[in-house]
Image (cartoon, rainbow over all chains, first blue to last red):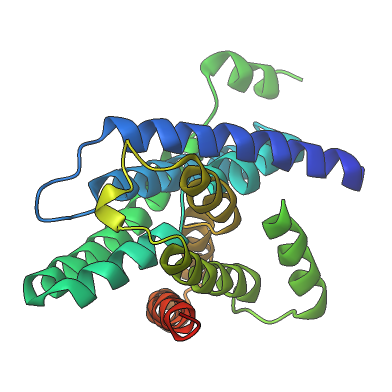
Length: 139
Length: 114
């Protein structure tokens, strides 16, 4: 792949992912105790999809260009680490309850994000649709 | 974009098992978001819906595009597949702890400047 083309793919994917996240943040309500539910949803959804893409790629069902667009581009744009730690740091400084909410937020995010990647990889790593499988079997 | 480039630069120079590229990217992004949020006088709870355009652009757009949570988890799953449970845990915990410190340090730095 030409480096210039790869940059274009990441750029396009990143734009799509970042816009998707802004919409998601507007849609998902923030509970009154300040738990950053919107960012949690974005991160977990992105983890699921990045796992799925990795699973497809490992199976050779999608090519490197698609994989780069989805993982480094779109999912990198949809998920965010800076908002994740920043929201936690703000909560921690706010109050004792805030610190507890922040701790729960960090643990839930990490556990759910990790589980989502594994689930996504499992689904993505499954055999492709029957039609394609048959095509492989019959030379 | 910037993330991809740094990831490649680090990837070319460091060949160890620790996902250093994603780590450095996330930590530096956290530092910047902490710093800028104080500079912009952003109250996190006002961030939604009626946030300023500049906020939406820099905090969500640029930094959100630069840092990544999903790649971190994918790195972690990759390490786990290599039976490297200790490295997985230390990577995730170190990322979060250092990221938090970086965000706080960024905010403190901005306040020092007044």
